[in-house]
Image 1 (cartoon, helix red, strand yellow):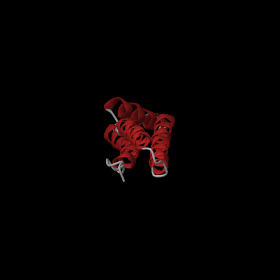
Image 2: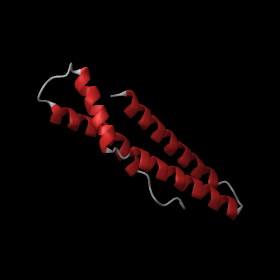
Image 3: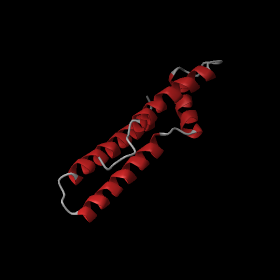
Image 4: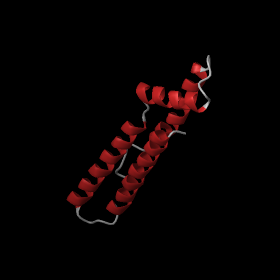
Length: 105
């Protein structure tokens, strides 16, 4: 997997980790206003993770080219490398889709 895709997955994972940490922390706070602010921050982090995780065409194209170059630029395998790039980048998106929208639990 290319550096950028792996880096993106790590950033998404860290955002999700922080969101979960803050959500857990909110359970220990007694002040309602503080709880609401923490939950708002949690939701913002989750939304950022979702946005970062969704691969766009440029990211797929870049990763497909990296794969093509790793295989010494063979002719006629464009679709294969495009599909592989989509699959790799989809991993981040799938992780983000597992994030529940409800932060009030």
